[in-house]
Length: 441
Image (cartoon, rainbow, N blue to C red):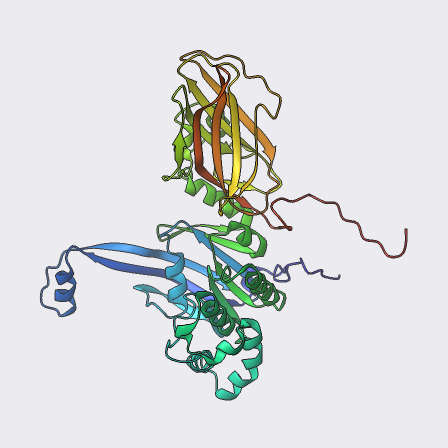
């Protein structure tokens, strides 16, 4: 059977017990002592007192997992869940409090890019410095030098001291050194989005090359689209514990519930639907909201509640590209208003308005609500935007005494993360059907 480039070669039919672990993590625990006073830390370090008050913080708590040779495993979780800590222990940057890590293969780690660089050395000197620290001889570094220089693409600056580099040149060189030492195991922590868009594209191509070569990859990222696209298996950490492990879609769905505090709720089969329809507490309490939103208006109407929910009716900030989703609004009126216009718009993270609509564009008459009335509007559509982060703005406007009036506007009130395993060019996917045949029509 032939294998196309999108086939994941590491999903073999062999049983897990027949595979060789590249990384074995057994009951890993990392505890930090939090002291009320700095002098207490010094006293304990010098053994000057036996009665030192401190609190124990578990950055990792009894975590076990295997990463098998040739597979790509993602680790996701909220900030402070232990993702970076586990990578630093694997790579030897930190020592565990308890537990064991067994490595079978040579590791290259993309953690803190350029952490081992000497700012007084030239770029070329730093290449040899880092190569030596990794364990390469000068001859082995010489063999890889052209690949590193070509990948970094910083020209004659390679002979200048790195303290003169721009931040972009610095990370390009650091990434080039880390990625071109031919590792058997690649550890990546949020390091693929460095430099400009062209260099990012080069980084992702290199990442895909590693997968095709059957390299073992352990990948930490907040970019759920990349996790979904590249990973064969995903581990979910929360507050230092492993709470989930499995197929990307299954674990990303769990993560979505963690983000809105729903994972531990014992929901019956109808509760998600009731939430979407307005039963129970406020919808927006189950969303991640922007604390720095901008709002203004005349005060004659107010957005009382709002949310987004996916095709299952679950309130969420995360939407799968290609699936149907809804933005829902609840507006309370404090005066009689004729034909209020309700609007929803999407911006990218740079502030460019990508798309949006309102009830006037949709040729929908909203009637004449009076003081005390509450109206609910839903905007349901297929998610066609590329994978990434978007900011949602809401508006209630209209014409009062012949003048355009803003009753209430909420700018960038919440974000939506779009998860995609296929991004095309531009802001949205045309969902093209492409056919290629041999010969002429």
